[in-house]
Structures are given as C-alpha cells and as structure tokens.
Image (cartoon, rainbow over the protein chains, first blue to last red):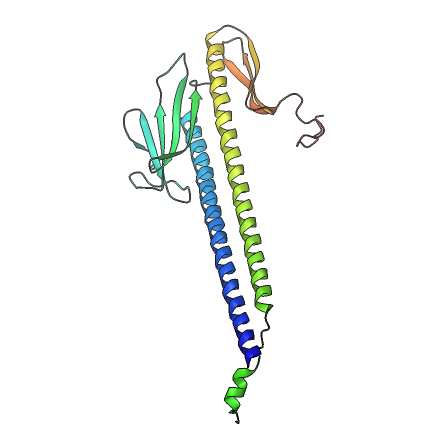
Length: 137
Length: 132
C-alpha cells in the first residue's frame, strides 16, 4: 500500500515537472517563432519596396508612366499605392505601401528624383535616380 | 478483509512507467527547439539577403546618378570619348563608355555593371568564366 502511494506521488511529481519544462520551452520557442515571423515580414516588405522603387525609377527615367496608378500629391510629387503583395493599385485607392516620387529641380543638366516607399509613416526604402534628358539609354 | 475487484484494479501500477513521460517530453522539447532554431535561422538568412539586395540597388542608383552627371558634363564639353569606371561596391563598378560622333551626337557603348579588377581570384566567390 505504501509503495503504491509513493509510486503515484513520484509519477505526479514527474508529470508536473515535465509540464513545467514543456511550458517553459514552448514559451521560448513561441518567442523565437514570433521573432522569425517578424523578420520574414520585414524581409518581404523590403524586397517589395526595392522592386517597386526600381520600377518607379525605370518609369521615370524612360518618361513613360503606367496609366491609371499614378496620382499627383503636389506639383513636384507623384505617388501610387501598392497592396500587401506589392502589386500597384488604381489611383485613389488606399494601399499597404505608398510610393512617392519627388522630382528635384534641374542641376547642371541633370534632373534627380527622390523615390521612397512608405508603409504608413515608416520609410522602408529610398533611392535617388538621375536623368540627363533625351540621349539616355 | 476482502477487497473488491475495483479496489484491486486501483492498486495496479500505471502502464506508463516512471521516466517514460520524461523521455517523451525531452524528445518534444528537442524537436520544438530544433524547428524553432531552423525557422529563425532561415528567416534571418532571408532578411540578410533582402538587406544585401537593397544595399546593392541603392549603391547602383548612387553610381548611376554619378554616371548621369558625367554624361551631362561630357555632353556639355567637346571631348570625343569618355570611358570611366564608377565604383558601386568593392567588387563591382559601373562601366560608362560614351563616344561623340562628327555630328555632335553622343552614343553610349557601355553603361553596365562590370566586376572590378582583381575580383575572381582563387578563394573569391566567383565562377571562373571564360573571357574569350
């Protein structure tokens, strides 16, 4: 009878210890997985922003803008919105990202454009592109 | 005193012996840890790659702006040829080669990314490509 009770207590103690260790480890692992998810999201956002900025720079340098997506913010700045997958949205729609292109005044025959990709108020990626008029690529 | 069959059943030892649960928990904890570490390492590698790509693109556009500036200076001048390498990174440069013809028209022969001199030595991460 005594051995039976001791064995039962030992089993219960082992169960409680294992549960505690498992919960502790699961907590740490969930933390790691959340961190990995956040890194993965940042990585996707950065890649989408880089592609969007590169296409905007190419459009601006060639002088042919895609129709229906660009809208004017003010006289110098143009913008377009992108969805979460990095696809451009029709002008006027709210998107997950916003790309802005600000043309700077001409300097010694060269025009520059500041292109930045924002997610809310946070700037994800920015580049400055240059163009020198008609004989360019 | 006689015991009922039910009481006798309660006294029987558990089919799962002491220690088996610990072994299962250790295996579970180990696999959870390994998979979390692999996921994190993969996500970190993805992020590093994205960051490297972003840095490369930013450096390329910086060099491209410099090339446009040189082009504008060349177009405003009288030289017949411009052949320059504008550094992008330690391993790459933007090769700019412009030629002015007799009608003062500018032709570009090269406006592309080329590997730097010395890149591709043994031990570097370059493929030995036959250059002809």
